[in-house]
Image 1 (cartoon, rainbow over the protein chains, first blue to last red):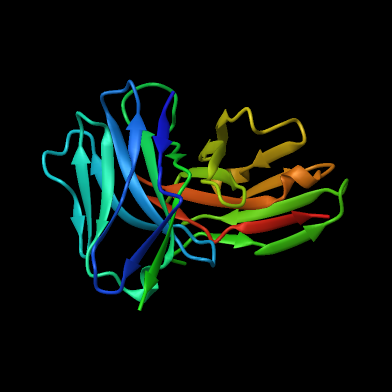
Image 2: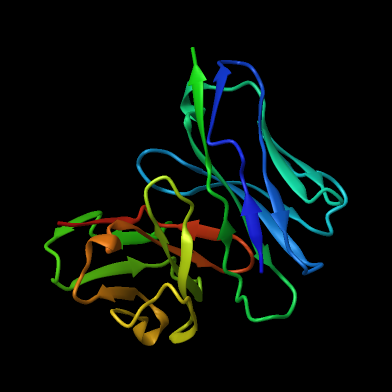
Length: 118
Length: 111
């Protein structure tokens, strides 16, 4: 069974600094996808970044980058130049891709609350 | 329509009552998922539709829960005889290839 672990219940960062949110995963499937979502207090899940298990390079999207270390089964999110609007809950999620009957459902971690201080 | 719409946004109900939530997906997305998120936790998968067919149900989906997606368009999630433990955010998500779009959710409070 898939499992996602986010060990940081809360993180604090100073505005304009960089912050890393940790995510480790466990799966026996060689094909999988890793996602990061942001959930502000309004409740909507906002897609940030995606990394496929066979992607050779780490994914980047603007201020977001994913530090993908396949052998260690970690997929940490790095937010550069933090902004006050980055304060939210952040979730790491995984989806199996090949075969099986997962039908593309996502398995989420417990989340990390990020607070950006001015 | 560029997003996934969920209605209502908030629902307060008395224990034992039935409630129904609606999800209107992005029109070209044939895959639809329901998730439940309790306070301080990540979303947990409930059920999956491909077009109108319900192809997977989680063990979390007890007999009191039923979901439908008639004609492969909007979907409804009904909870019968609600219990306080059903209080949660219910999220709908749709996907086409491998990207997902989530709705804003329906927050259910059972009193």
